[in-house]
Image (tube, rainbow, N blue to C red; front, side, top):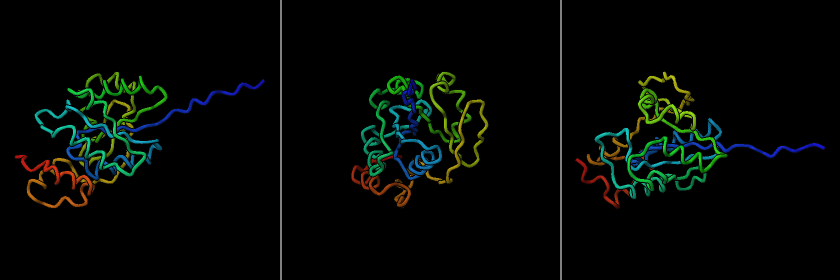
Length: 200
């Protein structure tokens, strides 16, 4: 009698974390490229409540960042928002988030996306040695950054799009155009809510 094995095919899901202050086309390009090149089922956009790596930086209210991400990924069924760090509040440590996700979704292999600028800082991440046992790091190239690391990291080549959230905020403060740098729906929301009018 032939015994048929139960299918144990695991899901492959990417995670792109950040403050998303605001989300821009660079985020979407990275998510799309990583998903496509690694054959992932979907990408989770993970807004942070209080990022531990951004000392001294202020960010706008979580409710606005969440709404902007929702607008940025609208129309992509394979892009979803993950609110666990926002709901938990406080300082957002990747280890705590990934541990919870892996405990709740044992059939999923998670791929955590970082920029090349973060690769050299991995040794300083909270519980990084335990973290690499739970998740596969994926680094996307950024000009002028070293990709050398002792940690297991998959390196993905993506188009170098020199867009950052800080650049967009500064352009808006200076009344410069940000057309084609962020999704139109996000820009309309920023303008309606006047999110960056009073930054110094």
